[in-house]
Image 1 (tube, rainbow, N blue to C red):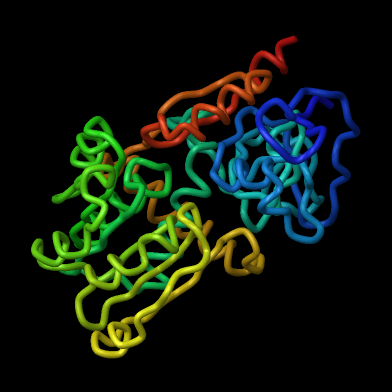
Image 2 (cartoon, helix red, strand yellow; image 1 turned 60 degrees about the vertical axis):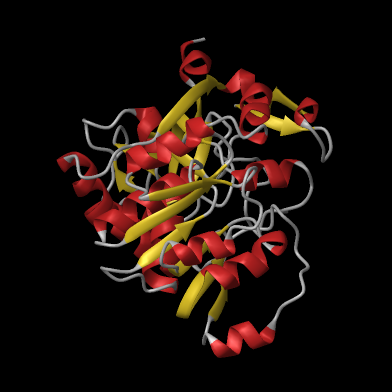
Length: 328
């Protein structure tokens, strides 16, 4: 099969297409003919050698997949020819990939392949961290950093679905407008407001902060949070080491939560997949949520797609398509 391979950890120039053996399906897995694969920051970090795949996962990049079932267990709820999508541990940047049946979601006809591939990581991450980890409630406020990213766009919308208010940080006025369209009531440009804590406090403060940045935002995140606030850190784009004012943590009774989705047990991911399947898909179909798809690239242009995401140019999700490969 054709797949994206990497010569060594590094930049986009280390990626290329090559013929490799297809994956061998195990019990409880679906073998998919891939139609589209979502791009995530985790892919960029893995490409750079900063985020190795967990034990047993495919070394091929790609955590979100949409495709056609080629093989399944005899007692599976899916059959060859079924259209499905879901979250995988790796291997989506290829003609064939393996998807645990527990994480598979039937693709409705109203959802395109590209749209389906854009959903799992962003929405499952948003649900996991806002609902399960932070316990965001109706009437509360969440500050979403990187609001125009795939996860950020999902989190802003999910807050609205839950009856909560969302603030957002972005890096451009175009992204600010995008976040307001999604429902964010207050948005700031971090390039213009590096010390955002006092400003967010003046807006009324946040009950929850969803932060993929890390170290350089810690002090302002604590300042922005209300008493009994929850800081959920899901990434380290701004560094891993910071000085922590324990006094602020104690006086405000703040809960600090570290969270990553990829290494979670299968049963946790399966629970999140059911939330996506039942709650998110229904709201999307009803028009209460929207798919935030920025663009798509053919698999052969994976380097261009990574460079685009790495430059923070995307508003929502970027997806790789395998239609040219399959037609060739």
